[in-house]
Image (cartoon, rainbow, N blue to C red; front, side, top):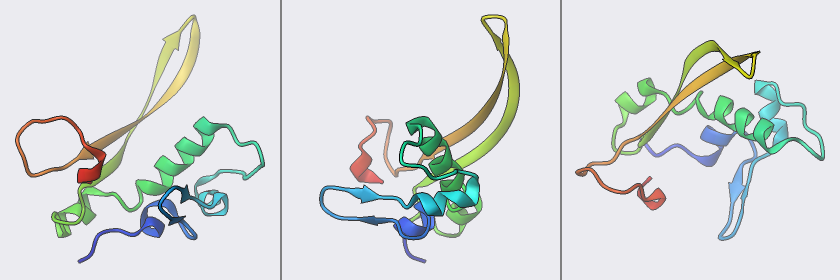
Amino acid sequence: MSAPTLEDIFGSGAIQDVSTVTIQKSALQAVGLTPSPSNDPQALLAAIALIAKNSLTETNRSTDMVNRKITLTYVGQDLVIQSSQNYRRDLFYLALYKTTTLATIDPDDY
């Protein structure tokens, strides 16, 4: 099996070059993002997490531990009270796998 592609993780039309990564907002519509010229950066990150979790699963990693080095799992939701206000909190678990001893995270390793 080969490493996941940009499109596997970020959706259709995702590309990169030496200086940029481009993720199509239209690909993020599949997880509920309404594309606009001024989407909130946090909404974009939430949509990226939701689409990436579909590819970065523990099941996919178990079939190819050499090329699948990251998993992103939706853990669930709970309610928290902050400043007398109820907030729904959705939780994700991001795991980075590397054959090594404990060390500093280096993005180039993944």
